Image (cartoon, rainbow, N blue to C red; front, top):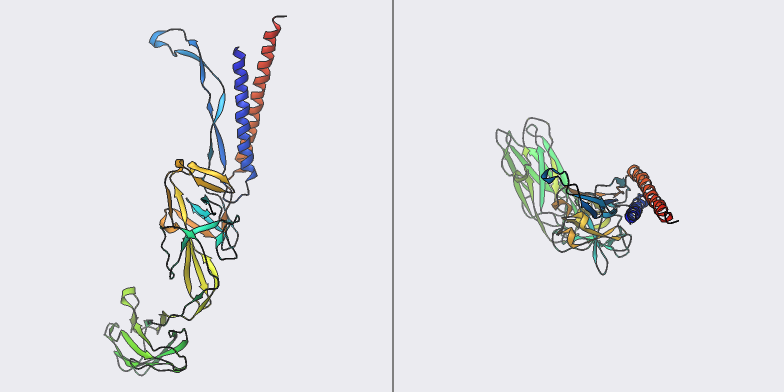
Amino acid sequence: MALIRALNSGVSGLRSFQTKMDVIGNNIANVETNGFKSSRATFAELMNQNMGRADSGGESSPQMNNQVGLGVRVASIDRDFSQGVMQTTGRTTDLAIEGNGFFLVTDSAETYMTRAGNFVFNKDGYLVDQGGRFAQGYNARDGQVNPGGRTENIFVDFDQVMEPRETNAVILTGNLSGEAGDERVLSTTIYDNLGNAHSLIITLQKIDEYNWDYEVTFPDGGSATAGTTGTITFDSDGNLVAGSEISIEGFQDPASGANPTDFTVQFGDDDRGIRFTQFAGSHTAKVLSQDGNAQGQLLDVEIDGDGRLQGIYDNGENRTLAQVAIAQVQNNNGLEMVGSGLFRASSAAGEVFVNSANNLSDTTINSGALEGSNVDLAKEFTEMITSQRAYQSNARVISTADEMLMEAVNLKR
């Protein structure tokens, strides 16, 4: 009977809008879930039934067949991967991806993708999520990371000690000005191979219009075998023409027990655009840098926008310890949701690309923040209202068709 079609259409509408309400309910339930991506249900018409040919009008006929639809079905449940709101937490290991991509986490069996970056270091020094899954990345070797290769569990040894490094170069910068007889004193700290600190004094005295004598001394004790005295010379344009680099050889303080140290003192560095001049302006000459350091104990770890874990040491030095890996796929909607904010790459997702954030376009990492859910409550409540009305309307179709069937049955009485 034809009214059976109306009943079936109404039932299909009820089922479809029940599914849509399930989707809406799940979205609203996860409005505070970090990294959650909302979903939507889309519908498609069920097949049509031909009721016979339309009145023949030849080629001028507007249609060839009379057709009636058989209801509706859920065509797809799509996930919206648009950016969620950044929520500042202040915790260094809370990470949020701005742009495209996913964090990688692994358990003993499988590797997953997630947008939820609420990580923490466990008792063994591994960076893990709240389920104990290991965050994936690239651990540093000698302060260097090589992203793009095989990922590994991110690990930080909080008991590690940065080895001392002896000074190889001291670089001076600025303007050296004054009258003949003027004396300028520059100072810094250098380090031997054991990490012992030694004060370094460079005394400069102007001899004439173009020449300055220098003397290098070590007031804490020790001496060098060569290079501690000499002259630097400027031309009439105020540029160095002689003595731009001096070599200090065989510095040693017998009380420290360290090996002899050789290092250079550079008056500027042309390769880096650092100049040491003699102009008529104010005196600004100073020690710009020296490349040695004492032994250092790891104090803290910070994470930058490229996902690098930077170790902060008590000797004032920083060192890269690891870098977080980011995964991208060709089709985000091809990812399979497996719960707990985790995704699994299916064949529909296409190729999986894994690298660091700085090697992927339009992707940065915010440390001390989490990505919030992208659920739009106003939109969800609007969809809920329309779904409720559609459900009621389909229920009315069923009840009306039932009454019509009852009338047809009653014709026999």
